[in-house]
Image 1 (cartoon, helix red, strand yellow):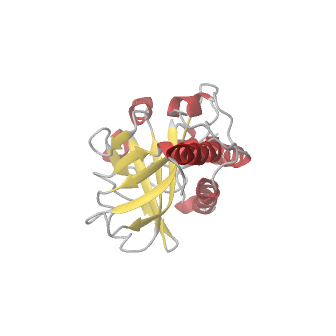
Image 2: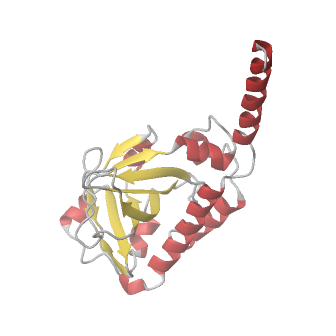
Image 3: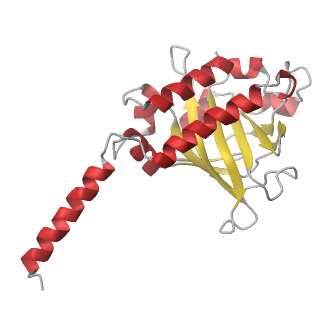
Length: 230
């Protein structure tokens, strides 16, 4: 049987090992998978111009969130849950590294049903980007959200679409369209950010400003977004 000092040494050793694992430079596999899925989702949605997000909207976007595989969660009564990434426009016109975020609750429209659905949010204002940095953001309350138009042009967009600060889209079973996400809540996933960037106390501002370097997958994601939203 270990003496008290022995337990202390054992506990100290375990905590040290956990700290090393937490602060490792290699991104966690789960976050890497999310980033790769985000690239695939954006490529798939944009491959057919007639049913894609209008290029003019993306060209003027301040931010874009890509959330692959939103599913109906048993622990969220009447709602959905998914995890994805958010990138913002940099002062130089490019795109930042991604911060991880979740979406939950709210109504996702009839076309989602009970199956897995990919969600994209296009942020049209800098104000909504600044608000989301606080960590929690409610669509429809903190900023107006509307189902976005699809196609090569935005002539068919309604006044509601044009006035909304955030436009939302979904893709399910190959069908892509604008979808209302009123009442859904976005939360920054601080632990996912820490795991991906290898820094326990990394902030959203650190990520968006480029103060931390991202893994190779972050570069791939940035370049993909820049292809469709130069």
